[in-house]
Length: 278
Image 1 (spheres, rainbow, N blue to C red):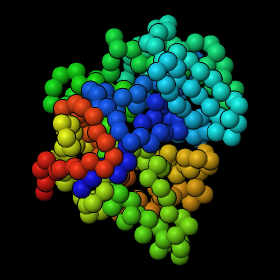
Image 2 (image 1 turned 45 degrees about the vertical axis):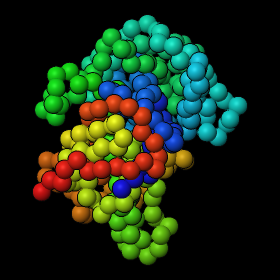
Image 3 (image 1 turned 135 degrees about the horizontal axis):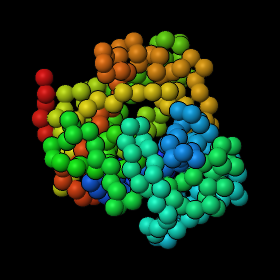
């Protein structure tokens, strides 16, 4: 089994970036969901409410974070990559924390793109969010602005199975979807469909990932990540629900992970399963 893809989403909800290698940190992959868009009250927003966030392309260099509109390459906004900004209270689901406001210029740029009054904040190293202690093996395990866990692992064989079902359902492969609909961090290839349900963890090089909880999927999976349009039949969520819906867990695809040993991971690296669960 190997790593097929690595993805980060520097600004929560905006378009992802495929990387050839990534550094695994306690909060997840480096720069993953370190920034977040909030409304005037500090409440987070995502593609659930604003699918047009897919049109915000994010890149970075040693000095700046750069935001570009996908259909207007001249519409650009840049902010310093340095940790700075005025502290403000923000909320991600039930989690309340203090973040660093990134200023009026980027707030105005995002407000114009989204057509909703918003601010951009960055996670403060002085105010890290802990994950649900029910799934952590230690106290105060941190997470970025991700929904709940540092890393999301998906299996390419599971996507192939889903796309086969979609092709059979609609009579051709035009309804098949790419993996980016599920916004994973680590994509592996070389196992049976949904074998990830029975992995306790993964190891690649010096990095260990503890797989702790299946991922409950939402309307974001029905959103084309390049155009920001919703699927008219709510696919793939509708088809997933026919065979991946679990009581009290939801519609499942992918597994949430917590890093145990940190380091660098690369596309193409061999991956070992720590333990097969029943």
